[in-house]
Image 1 (cartoon, rainbow, N blue to C red):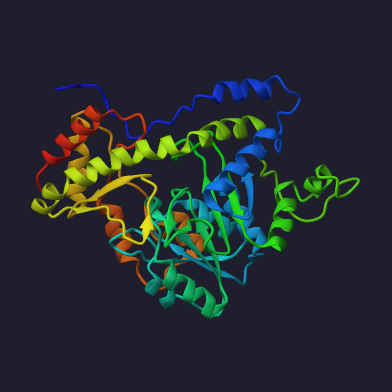
Image 2: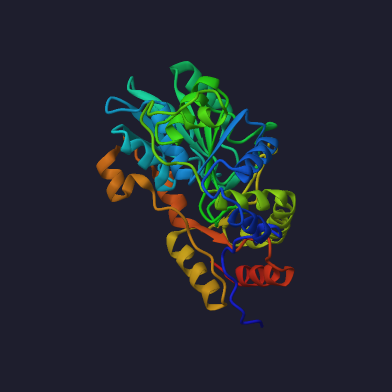
Length: 379
């Protein structure tokens, strides 16, 4: 048996990264909004169909911008899933608004519309929807709630570039969407993100917020003869070096996705019999949505079984981690949020999920080794 360690994730290397970086370093333009920013933005528009896209320093920065655009404040509440990364909650808390934690659907890890409806108040201003693992949430019900109550929907689409719900690209369904290009994501530039918008008025203000509160973007387009401080904002614009790497990655987006789906599909085909024998729940995707093969997870019957599976895989040289600690039980969640209804499914999901290695360069024999190790485990 091979003893080579199989790591959980490895950043993809695109063929033109070094050439693009050299072009930037040889130029006189290394700050943001250069040729590679323009090129990468155009490629993202082709993938998503979004009318407006602004590259940012991270998905967290894009979420911060969303909070500013919605003018969140101390009188506001924002509903978000407890089973989530901290960035969405931090964007709410930074504005002085209250995070209201809702539960997830046990089958997908996505926000449960019924749980959202149960925690609505007259102070609710927005709902954050995370498409966990690049699989779309139940958008029909969530959109209906938002429409009825006049709420904004922020799609935290860190996992979902290229995914769809009923043919609609993820990140473009709600009021605004965000993307992540952290090096653990399908497409990356080390650290980076993007904000997706369809509203022209929001876009005009977002450009200002992104450029330290100035109208520098309009100045660069020749729309004004000088730029000045117009609004609150911060430095959310990534350097041209980051954009150069992202542009090279996007050139190979189809290859990246095909390789990730190769691994995902192999797991999905090989594990059902083992899962049935051991009361294991496998990741599923509804027929009306296309996923991104961002991750592949299994769900064990109990937390003890989860820990045992992780330990057994580690003993065979395979890294397979669990995921988020629910926000409602975290120290900051208790300080900056409230949980009107206990998020029991979030706690159960977090305590039983195991993510298997998945990245484009994972060789077939390595995938087979993971499958062999997983199916050797019995509950």
